[in-house]
Image (cartoon, rainbow, N blue to C red):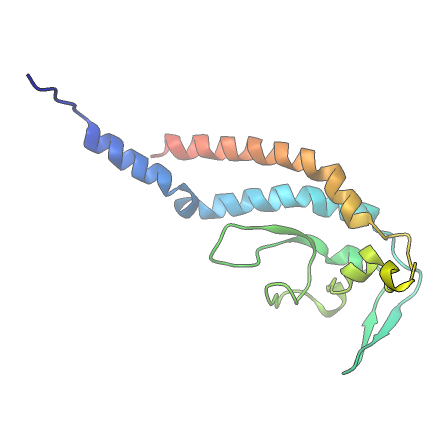
Amino acid sequence: MSVVITGVSELNRRIDKLAQWSIRDSEALQKIGHQVGGVYASYLKANIKDLDKDITVRTKKDTLKVKKGQLRRSSGTWQPNKNRNTILAGPRTKAIGKRGKTKKYDDGWFAHIVEKGDFDERFGGKHRTRNTGVFERGIRSTWNRSKKLEVILLKRNFGHYIKNL
């Protein structure tokens, strides 16, 4: 006596298509990543206070000008690697992922100085600004909201993907 199962090849074909979700529906997953990252980016734009003047930073090679509002304008989402669905949120800079789109006065290259101060406490410094800690506070306050939004959007997208197999 033998058992014959019909439809196994069809089942295997559909499972293979399900495994290709992140590749076949890449644009939709990137859009979801931008929506989820937008929660944190909008928090930053709302909570970063602009300085009242432009500042100049001297490096070994040249002098850089930081315009007022530059850190707030640099907050957003971006895709560091165009071959993946990973989306990051926070201050955008040319230093991460060699972003060519970041304008000169919208570059947040100095965000680590704002977050931790320009003279670290382990060396005796306590240089703080009113924006010090805004990134850490933002992550803590938007984490749950963005995770819930991500789960909702991924479930919805996966449901649409399965229906269209």
